[in-house]
Length: 346
Ligand code: 5AD
Image (cartoon, rainbow, N blue to C red):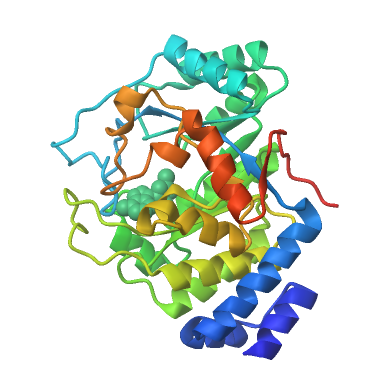
């Protein structure tokens, strides 16, 4: 086990069998070791700095019906909302004044948000905030739509592949959604020139160690600039509402593996991890994450963007709570980096 961790640290790679060994049998001592190595790797690139991104949840209308997700089409028990352009711009203004230089526009796959409407929003943000990065997280779109978003001024795109195994993908998504289209999207995004993020939920229904190995190998081959990893958390109004949440230690282990294999990547300590356990955000950073994404959405809408139960959006998860976040990061020896934090090879 130690030699696998050492090799990951020195060579940024591991064989599938070694990954399997690590995922199947990492005890708490080895978890501590790999977390430490991952933290050292992040610190060598980024110092004791954590980048912040302002997350704006622009709408919870979604034509998809993913079995795990609280904003799935079949959930009749949530109030749907859409932020209009002026509201989104107001969120950006508030964020910019607080010091944010990345805005992440995330939302369900909403047919109302046509390419034209989306590019209108992107172009206006680009015009008003020329010094800020625009990240989109709007799901699967056509190649032409992605090209239009990029031309309008978007820089980054987050689209988790969720699982690289076709059979597992079908366990998480209804017919009509396909892994091949998801992967087509990720290829498009990279080719167009987006800094691209992908990732998985840890502990999603039916996920096996072999699935995780496949995910790690896929990500190693894609070389995304950003990698999003968080535990699955149940939402009571979904088919997976009674499934157990993803495991904390497994999430921290995967964060560290990704950090060691991708020393330069931007890896958030996710809201899901912070929701899973009280010190989750800090634990993620101490396992090699280097980004947090406080919530900049209008406070009255936040509870409606419920991907899972008890989703944290206040306190240190809130953009207004930046001082609280700063204080919590300082406790573990980190500070906030207010820069755009673009991906770069050092
Ligand atoms: N638990 C954890 N993460 C979830 N996501 C969606 N639903 C859940 C859930 N129940 C994640 C997916 C998606 C991202 C926006 O949120 O991985 O890509």
